[in-house]
Length: 352
Image (cartoon, rainbow, N blue to C red):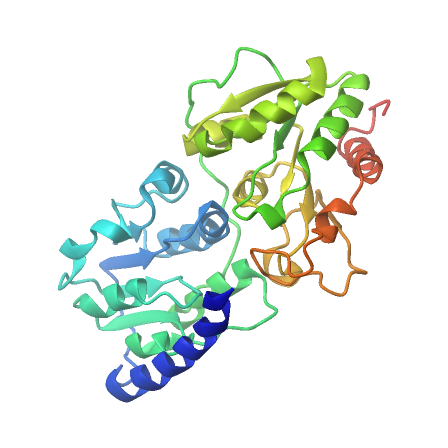
């Protein structure tokens, strides 16, 4: 709580210091020929999934350029598959990138963290594109402003404008086969995790929903990482014979399991946006997340949210009123009704 109070003061002071000390230089001229391009996309799974269509546009616009992407190691197989970069780097091991030459460096970071912005400035690059937030824009000579109620993918796509590139959807490559998580076929995937506890629909509600789905003849695969294995185990045991757990930290295994599903049921978390990237229909639960920025994309993305609550979309990792009402007031009956409508929409011959 103390950190929440101190943080705005720190950021305001930092903003003043950076505006005084850091000189970004004049706006550059975009080179006529781009031979090398470095993009920093160092977010979590959801951030990277929403950024991938933008990275694909850059790859398509500069097919002969050397494309480097800075992204977390665990997500690098996904980025390599979808974007076909020439090289991949980790932000925590990026010291070798300092003083290297790139025609253009783009930082997709939209929060207050300075390390990606400083990396962009440390490269020997004449064109540095990135987002201004509390002074970090001083490290770029083509800074972009953040729009408060803009979807994150639209925000990421704005880095294309200075380069004269039009954002467009580019088909993903054929999926690289990954080892199956289980030997059992499933039609519905469920991912109960989320970065913050406040973003999680209650596990007992998930188990009730799975039992209702199984009564209709469908089997659920409950997905999670190693850190979420205890949560997955609790849900599977409470769900009866209609579910099996699958634990993996391999992003391509996760992607393959989701892509093999008719529907993914989850919270507003990374797997939701991975499903959107893959074109898989979703039923998701949203509470503290800012709807305008993080809604799932796609024609078959159903979101359950208590819009009537005054605190909805608080964007906090803890519940100020200590009730988690935004998630608990979405009941299993409401969720099953939404699931049934979605299933009938995507599978018109379904009897549910």
